[in-house]
Amino acid sequence: MSGDSDATAAQAQVSADEAPDPRPRLLLVEDDRALAPLLIEVLQDDYLVDHAPDGQVGLHRALTREYEVMVIDRGLPAIDGLELVSKLRARGIINPILLLTARGTLADKIAGLDAGAEDYVVKPFEIDELLARLRALLRRHSEATPTIGIGRRRFEVRSRRVVGGGEAPVDLSGKESILLETLARRPGRVFTRPELLSAVFDSNDTEGTVDTYVYYLRRKLGREVVSTVHGLGYRIGSL
Image 1 (spheres, one colour):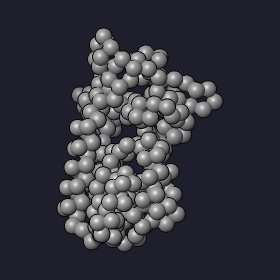
Image 2: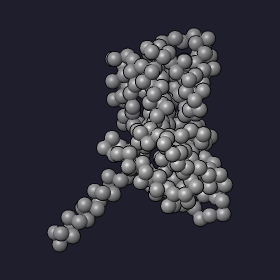
Image 3: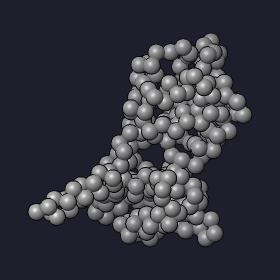
């Protein structure tokens, strides 16, 4: 009986370890050494928070990892917040962005929105207001883009299911879903293995894990779902 109990406990632990974290991933780009730790502490109850201390680091992380939402300070070193937002939009990043700023004039707000931000919060602000605005951004974004087209089929992001094309629906695991979404949201881009490792997997995984999950997707959806670009990496294919 003891052996059976141990086996059951081990299986439960494996299942718990494999369960994806339900929190959306958020990129915080903030150089204020007093404010940044406070925001991280408040946000991490509801979000998986990555912090970048300047615009250059923020640009690199936004281009190499998938985020559901971004909070960007306007006055950043290296790359200004407005310039960072413009660069991200020019690179095809469509995820919602909220700007933080000490500048509260109408002209400043218009400049932030014109750069590509969806919302604008003026410092000092109430934490509850910031959290409410982030929830609203995510809600509007998820309602606007509930599916991603992949050839004749559709990937339903929230249900982690591929449907259509005259085929039976296919359910994906958490990591399979994140990998497919990462590739499918930027259909013209070739992702290197290190980029996919950083964007999708855990710090203790290796580049071989990327190849393994590409194999899993191909096994479930067909070889054409992910194209290999020899010497470079992978990009989304077609279905």
